Image: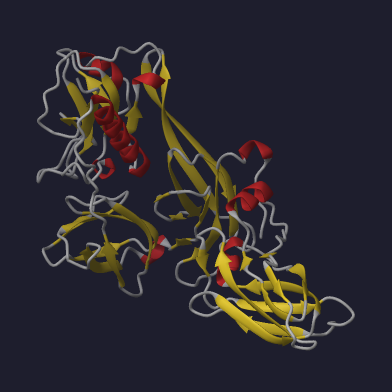
Length: 453
């Protein structure tokens, strides 16, 4: 593994002796186990497992096996004694892990020795300074799209934004962290918040990847290789595929290259095709009405068409509840669910705001200070929408956002209803799929959640 200064770091591969069974088998032993990826918690297929003799009775002895399609391996006819046990796999290479192995004792009979790579907490604790260990970690390599060669000295930039309250107004605070890759293209980016809408990109000279969204999930580590294509090669990449549901049924939907105005529609057969795309690592957004949106980091190539079938998951609607307390809990659950799954936006709760009124009639005080939102003299709420015409003299036009009340576009709460949460989406690609996009280009969306009465 490479630190930011390029110096080598060795992490011991976990090999735990979980079971020992003495048998009447003379001076021979058998070992079985499963090799797993501690980050993804999935078995590793094709891992090369090695046991190297480590005492006077096993010196010069080597035993090797390869894990099968379920990650399982088995070694037989081992001489009892002490061994260094470990494994090799491309997953370890992507983490920069160098094998050292773990010392275990093998006895006569059958033994189970499960193996796994370093856990997320181990990586964060090992690679990041004390002050950054509560944040997320991104590791990987930056490579040339055409040759797969490592790119030394590439800039890897992680950035994120937060809405902070300043004198009863909101301001967008943008923060970033950057590192340079080592001679082997390896980078370690610590200090990325796991609860913010963060993205990462790589830059080498005038060439760059797209901005790729970061999703940390249950772990605080993201493993990602970034591929840069030279601008001199032009934009000739092609992406085709099909959008389907969990049962393989085709879905009509929309496909968009993030950070770009290009967008195509998938028809009733779910088939889509995009041409003239920049090569390298790019972020592509897939949507269908009634389904959770999906954003994928994809490696696009000028040399060959990338074919990718995409499966979308139907949006889960919680069952109707009757008690006021249950209705409040349901609405807050949906609010938090949209916050976790969003690709951006602002999420405001009165409990976290200093001195803000809570009535619906005071909505303007919540959203008026947000970046991209304007309150006119007559009290109207406007947002900024990028223009789509090259001849436009201004990059943005003002438009009125749609407003949903408790998940419904045409709800009509009373002006005294108490606000329990507000979702604000100023860009189209931020809007969750549960809120259908109109045929004409949408402006933005505000969702107000109120306490039932």
